[in-house]
Length: 361
Image (cartoon, rainbow, N blue to C red):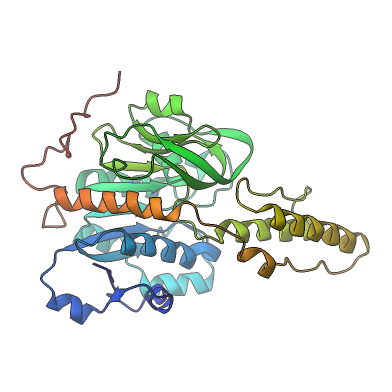
């Protein structure tokens, strides 16, 4: 079943206008279908706040047909916000106190922008630990995205991310390396995932933490891993939630930073993303930008209209499959009382009955 529009969050209207099925709460109340309540801890900066909402809401809404999904976005007070974003959050978001009181069946934690190499110095550090620790004891499963995965690996498993030296940026092929897990048992064995990061947790670090790697790529490294019990923590390093144009927007932002003098080098292309034709157009644009700057003129705008129709999305269907599997597994183990993490018969040390509650050899 679709996501239920349980408040006036603009994301519901945007998704409905784009053709996605959004269920009216009155109609939802008339259906005898179980609800699943999913928290979305949105730590993204102001410019990406609403886009990130839409990306994850869309993934959840398309992922599974067995329940009505109520998605509850919230954020951390420690994150600095401009007035517009604060007003959006105050009007449409829940507080962590309310989330904690009412309970969740599952939780998604987004990435965040950081200011330095040590995550423990970031303003979100202590509040994030509080949320993750609460979720471990009270929520069936927590899915972490990119930076959130790095933070959890540091404070829960003692594994600090390492700098890559240069940005890992683009769309990369990945292979399922453990098909025994129901998260990936029925998805493509080879599929793409977007990445955008300067740091990584290596396969050796995931192994040292006792986590189970399910998906990785030769170039991009580990994408998907789970906690030793198989489900209570699901850890992404990539960004399967990205829209088709997300990396284009990021590339445009970096070009604008170069034009404004905020970066010294002209940005490289995201790997595996632009066609040969698009790269030729963008190379010509780069020459015009440099010429304009040298002449003291306003740089030309990025020719997005000539690029967008050439972009392909090679990751979204598999992302829906993985998220759908995750929702289905949560549905099978979560308690009908959303303040309790598991059904009475479920073993918290091995919720899926996989026998994976021991660290791998």
